[in-house]
Picture 1 (cartoon, rainbow, N blue to C red):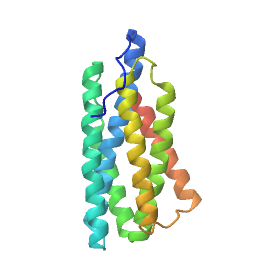
Picture 2: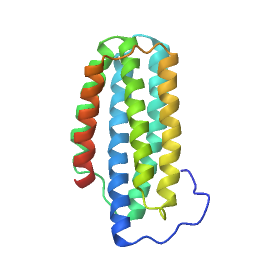
Picture 3: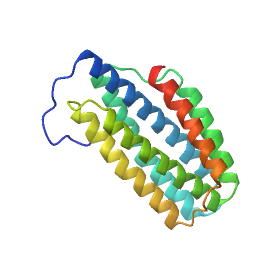
Picture 4: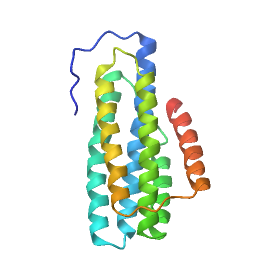
Length: 181
């Protein structure tokens, strides 16, 4: 787990609740990442791509553990909708994978670009005193950018604009619900 570079500050109850809600959203994202990568790996045609997807899935397992630890530390709970998020993301991963490796990689690249932007917005919203969550989010952001770059280097096809817009809309629905539930 990434360690903060300085000692944490004191947070108000309101700041702690907001940090917990943001980390719940990030935890849901990691639940979905597990499902997406696992499903895409299951149907990948290229054995090397399958191996890379599984490696990324293992790295996302670290992110899942880090966000769960932050939830526990903040006295927050994971989303009760996690089984639904997992099932939906797994289905999307299967569909993306069945479209062929270039489009599957395009889906990875676009997902990770959107996740990176989302994590960047969380860095602006996390309480300044919550340096432990900030350290986790900053490392996750670096890792997600690397996953996007690897997908592009691996031959990702650019997704059409309507697909990207639909992904942004679905992510907005998920993050809004996960923030609360």
